[in-house]
Image 1 (tube, rainbow, N blue to C red):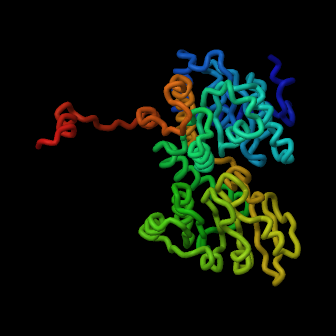
Image 2 (cartoon, rainbow, N blue to C red; image 1 turned 180 degrees about the horizontal axis):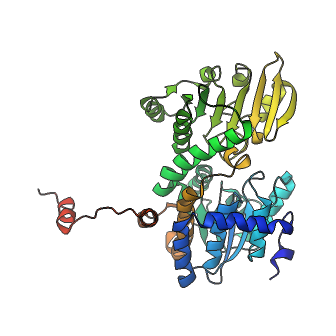
Image 3 (tube, rainbow, N blue to C red; image 1 turned 30 degrees about the vertical axis):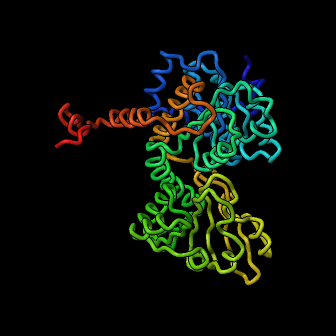
Length: 419
């Protein structure tokens, strides 16, 4: 197969720089390297086609190469128009992976790339936000029959999958990778926490210390964003709809209040809810002059851009990835990265060492669902604990850290109700 002629990328001349990026992350992903060694020997995907939709940058590219090393014919597309890196796409094509992706395509092109990826008739999929699954279950049901199952990366995607499952419409098993311990404890918390502020700081070049940061949503991603904001010297306010999470945020030392009140105080706003319109008209109307809005949820619907534009008298790009909206009273409100994922649309995403664990989970979960898809049936399932623990053990070994093991007597004691 000629992957150059079969792919859609911006410029194959960019491939050299893409290879350098992929080589760099490979050096910092020891867990995934170990999985790759296993896959090269065991060939779990021999003769199968795998379709991947993820943020298409270097770490994702290396995951694609690991799946390819397991015997798969891999096709990949981006899961966000502003996170695709054109040089990485070109490098993957040179490495024999079919790519349908460009940075910042128009909406029609973006959808076309998704559909072309599915038209390769994959046996397995790796999805981000449920986009591939949604297309398969709606307008392209003709491509469903060959799909054995797959794995989902995000909270948003799992919500969509569970809605399908609840309605009895899910047509194949999907592993909820986002709900694994090694995903939400490390990727969602430490990965999102660091990469969100990497993206904001790189884009704005403004100080965080002494400012007020409003974190909208206190799930694992929100916890990470709030923790890092505090570490940068900010005062942190958390808004929540869940009473338990709100108490947790309070106990963690943060102020908790409704968005209607928090909107008056924030210098920076970061949304991490997975829901729509969590910052909207009534909030824009009371914000400070110079408030900076950003989103770290999957879709660009958390900040209501339609209402923001309707309230403004003018708008302009004032710096790369910063759009200024001038209100009728002269206040200026700034939106980062078009309201898309600020850590990827305006940054390089999570650190390689963090994505090492998440993408190792993706790889082993994909192999698991391929082995067990008939027995699993049409459901959303958690990553088996033994796979989660295996990835954690590989990480410890890569770090040179040892831990204790139970003795036979201790195991017997824990399994007994008699002292």
